[in-house]
Length: 508
Image (cartoon, rainbow, N blue to C red; front, side, top):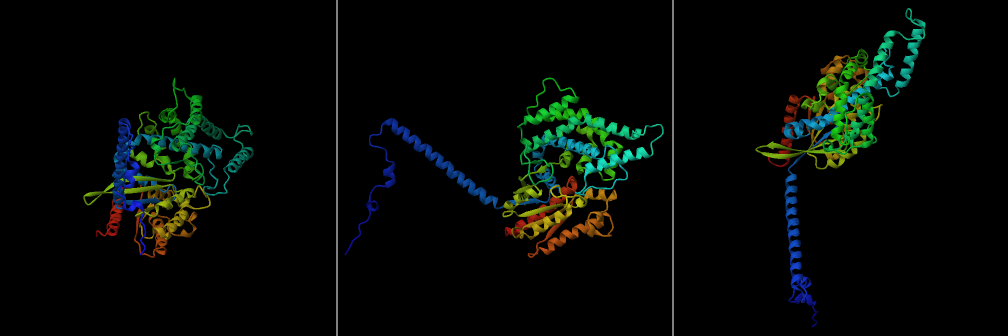
């Protein structure tokens, strides 16, 4: 009979590992102490790693019980404002902690509004043309050509019918006075206009995003704590400020806080000019005739410039809700939401909605429990900055179709916010006709209820066509800057999400 010889290690009395780490026979006492110390350090590090792995495992198991909520929608739909409402409801202390940082955004919003007003006035020759047609939203509209045509028509009218005792080569004294006033305001407000670029750099860190609109300023999550200054724009602001106002002795714009204080001084010195510009007949007529379109928050801040320009100004909660800054990428916010005597962690993801950023949403689809899709139904007369040929309502419907038909999202709890109902009501009250921009609206009544029902029906139809699994769509008419109403809607949304959450966890 043949017997195979086993390897020596199998029946060896010594542990090979113990043999490998056995100290040398000639080890000195000093070497022994050093070796024992190394072994103790290695054991301590190994225990720390083991404990961290246990903690990570427990956190992972707990995180599977968390709720992950995506806020989706096009840019300027109100997603970030809705996130602020969640923050105000579930983490009000964090909103208080970052309150001072919103002062930068408010100043930026005011400076940008003033800049756009002055640019619009320049395109109209600093006067209001009663007979010009409404070119807003027409991508083929050339404001420079419009100004040139307007100037030529003024010269022609003056030449054909000059006022008494006025030389034929001069325009009327009324026109000259208006243009002189606007020119003076443009000069006096130039430091504030220069501050717009400086504040934009502070907020965005100098980042420019391609494919995300014309001149948009985008911020990443955590912009509130950014403290690095950019010297180039600082010198630009200092030069503009010193050209009109006396720069304080020894002023140094090396930090963001000092830059914001500097802009605060500019705004305080120019608040009367801002009021004069905002209340001027030519600006109000341009707005009324829709030749000048500002963001929804412009009137909120410009109409209360005395309070905002005060040297001790601290943004109120309403100011924070109205302040506008565009999100870049995806920002995660954590909230502890109570449920039956315990708290559930909600991960709320606020996303950038511009076309060039929508690809960033996809990695968050796998683990999402719920989606709130925010559609601004007031935007029927607006067009995408990224594509001036695309109506914003059409873009929202296309985006909602993509969300409803996405296979990764078929089982996700879906909520629809038809937002900015307050802006819609104001537009309809001012005589803006929906059929002018949405031809399919036809001859339907141009009142609030009819318009809301029309748009809601279109979104519901999109959902019905892409609802193989009979998912319920929860829809709400919202104005997310209204704290009381939005708080009630959030509570309803929370309860509906928790019902699905408990069902999925087999608890009901």
